Length: 130
Ligand code: 5GP
Image 1: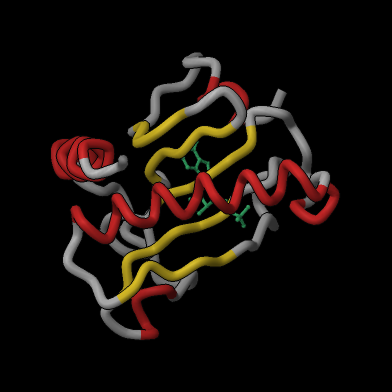
Image 2: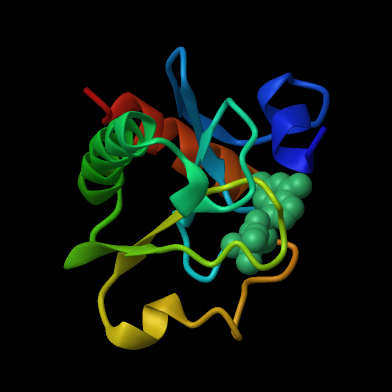
């Protein structure tokens, strides 16, 4: 069971922003920028391009809904999309609100983000997802 599956199962706490029967979205615990959100499939798969065409399409549509919520909740020019997958072997899409290119620098993360601010951001994003 991956750490993300434990989060989805509620065994590990997370700042959840959205969920449906197949996908789950929550704030990255070490965000590169405030509002940095991860979108993961509930079905465990390591590499994103091993996901079936149908599920990958649905995952991107779910990510689009989450990104629209992020953009409404957090002032930004666009929500950037990245896939790395080098740390956690459970496919995920990074969504990061951007004002400038440097806002998505994975070498510069916010360490120990304030829990109250993370909770507030997750609730703001969640309440803006249609
Ligand atoms: P990647 O696998 O895409 O290289 O990086 C995994 C991402 O997941 C990192 O940005 C990291 O901060 C995030 N992450 C790792 N463990 C946890 C966790 O337990 N909770 C949350 N919310 N994020 C995590």
